[in-house]
Each structure stands twice: as structure tokens, then as C-alpha cells.
Length: 186
Image (cartoon, rainbow, N blue to C red; front, side):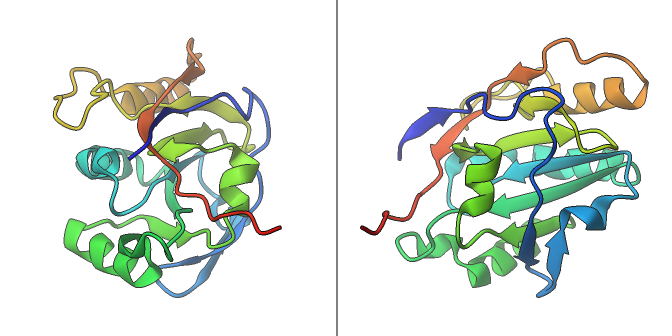
């Protein structure tokens, strides 16, 4: 396990990179599918990472609290050949077992993770209604899978956004396992 901290890639007010990815519902999902929401939270995640496992309930809480206003999309970009726990079929099983009711998409080519500059799991990106980046960072302040959060960072930032307030710290790095990149072919 390689532990990484999210990095600034997209900057505040950058546009959300477009995507069309297959979801665990066996349908393709694109950025435009979420146009009717006030915001969009894209979380790069996977099935096997202990950091993601520790955040699943917090991610579900964000979804439940804001599902009418904020679309939440999980994207798995891990190499499922080397990490079969992150395969598309495993994504379906994990989503069912964990009661995940948000879209969970597979990025088999890893192009979308690269466009976003995602490096770890979880790596969350929050966009406004125009799909401009307003926050990139942690779900909460528990930075170790065994810690208990004392601050719900993402919930607080989404609430500020919905209340028309400024999110003062637009980048507050997440921490987690590195995205498992496919070997580059030469």
C-alpha cells in the first residue's frame, strides 16, 4: 500500500473534466447527466483501500444529506487486473453490501483520473452548478482508518456552498492509498 496525499491538479474555478463511464447499473453516465443538480461531488475511490473502507459511511452520509441538491459520483480508476478486488463485478457486490445508493462508475482506461489529477483513494472534488471546482479535499478530518472524525469537512463545505457562503480553504488534502495505475506500455 502506497500512502499518498491528494495534490492540487485542478484549481478553484477550473471546469470539471467531462466523462462517460459505465456504472454498476450497467448504464453509461456522463457529466451532463448531473446538470439538474446545484452541485456535483466526484469521489475517486475503490473497493479494497482501507482508507475508502473507513470513509464509506461518511460518503453515504454526505449523499443522504444532500442527495436532492448535490449529485455524488464514485469513480474507480484502479487497475483491476492486478487488483481483482476492484473489478467491475466486485464494485457491484461492494455497493450492494455497503448500501451505496449513489452512482459508482468504472474508469477502465484511467483517463478520467488523469484528467482530474486524482492520485489517491478517496480523492474528492466538489463542483458548483456550472461545474466549476469549489473544493478539492477530504471528507472529514480522520486521516487514518482507525481515527474517529471530529469534523465533517465535506458536509460543512457543501452546506456553506448551498447557503451562498464562501469556502475559505478550497484545497484541504485527502489522504489514502495511491490509485493503482496500469503499467505504461512502450
